[in-house]
Amino acid sequence: MSKNIVLGADIGGSHITASLVDIHKRTLLSRQPRRKEVDSAADAETVIGEWAGVMQDCFEGVAASRKRIGIAMPGPVDYEEGVCYIRDQHKYEQLYGLNVKNLLAEAMGIHRDQIQLINDAAGFLAGEVFSGAAYGYHTVLGLTLGTGLGSALYKDGRVVDADLWRSPFRDGIAEDYLSGHWLISEANKRGTSGYRSVKAMAGAASTDESMRSLFSEFGQSLGEFLLPQLVAHQPTLVVLGGNISKAEELFRKDLEEVLQREGIEVKIAPAEVGEPAALIGAASLWAEDAFVQV
Image 1: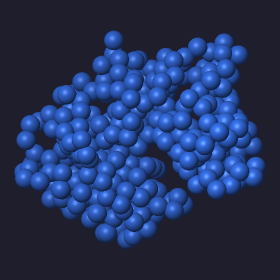
Image 2: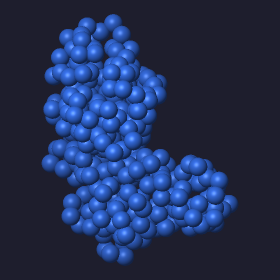
Image 3: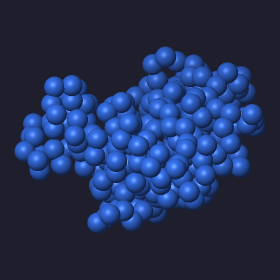
Image 4: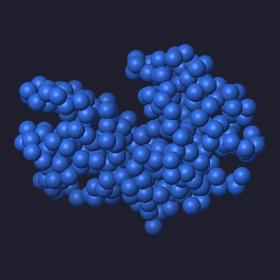
């Protein structure tokens, strides 16, 4: 197998998605990455076995010594060492204190040095910097707007988890107001029940004024939250990913108006790579020239 071919994997709260990635061409080798649902409450041996099985399937026929893997996964994790510290998140708590790198390496018959880990939000942004909307930019803030709030910062050639989800905001933290959970629960509070997903809410916005108002409020909240982050980090681009970003036409105007009132000018762009971004970003850990600045 060519040295340019690396496996990228994205581990979520209920699944794993994996594909071989050509880090020279900066693209997936398969149009249909392998995806498998995983019971995040299962015992550690079962979870590791499920993850390893999906990745082994991608490597079919490849010698063990040629396998290189980049994995994007949620934290907290010591990504360098491989020790998992996930707790009180209703997922993968049985992995707490275990070395994921060592366990996966043993299950796959490879050396732990053949595995690299990255935070899932950082993996998303790395994918967009490597081959998407943020390619060529010097300083980028990435947000994943989904069930929760993920964030990452690209600066000086490095992508790091910005860990903004728990930043103090209004009467709580940022994730309380900038997530799918807020949109759905707020709709129910206001008497607009029956919506179980952001996708359904966005679809109804064309005929439902209450939905349009709710997304407008979301955009204002996002703008207010971003103001101090933009001042602190001075990004030239903000990339929005996650399921909520697919409805950005419903809240982008309100977001930009908040920033403009404060004299903040920054380009805001939806993710281009989309769902495979974390796969490509994780694989890019093995690329010597991962991030090109122009």
